[in-house]
Length: 274
Image 1 (cartoon, rainbow, N blue to C red):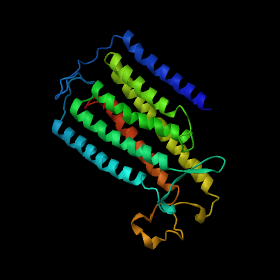
Image 2 (cartoon, helix red, strand yellow):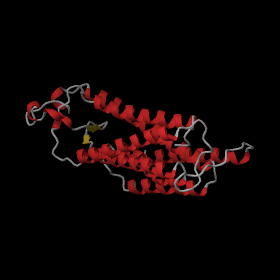
Image 3 (spheres, rainbow, N blue to C red):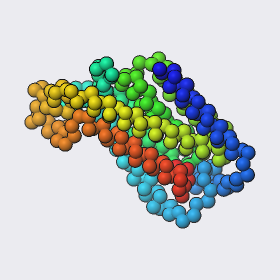
Image 4 (cartoon, rainbow, N blue to C red):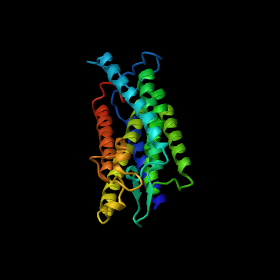
């Protein structure tokens, strides 16, 4: 099953790559690349019209700061081992077994961290080859999350790290060697593919978990009070609204917002390909 998925992904990549190569045989005229204001490197966009640099920088730095703070919190949360049972999320399998979301929490923490790094790289280098070197790691952790769900929440595949590392190498290789604008289109296309795939995986996980837990009693579910960790002991981490598996909706919501942002930037590239 896993190798069939890998084959399917490979075929899709080949199709995308073929479409990008078709631009070589068209007579479309692409804008001349602008240079980064700090480094002078060529970017993946032409001259920008009706562009407010100050507003763009303000929104970008807001994004950077929020992601930086979120990364710190994510690592603090992921490093906790003795969490109350009521706040532990489980990934359920078709056979009824379950795995805690510890590995997923760690990968999400790294994902947020490299989102922070990518934001800083975007500010410093603008949108281009140098930026994509850092942003590829952001995308790589999306791939890692997808692979983790396919493995039931644990890293059991011996080629897990090789697959993620190979992805990073391939993306950067094509970004560096392909000519403009194919390299920018390639980077945006493969990134959007991962964004959509991750949102689909989150949605399927939520639906599967929802169907599985329908027959369970409240005592068998996380996010409920238990005798070992009563509500009064630590009300700061006691969920008052979210019931399992509704917390998974946060992943679907955030991934959907991510898709909207990336798609908007691709369709209306007033600030480049970012």
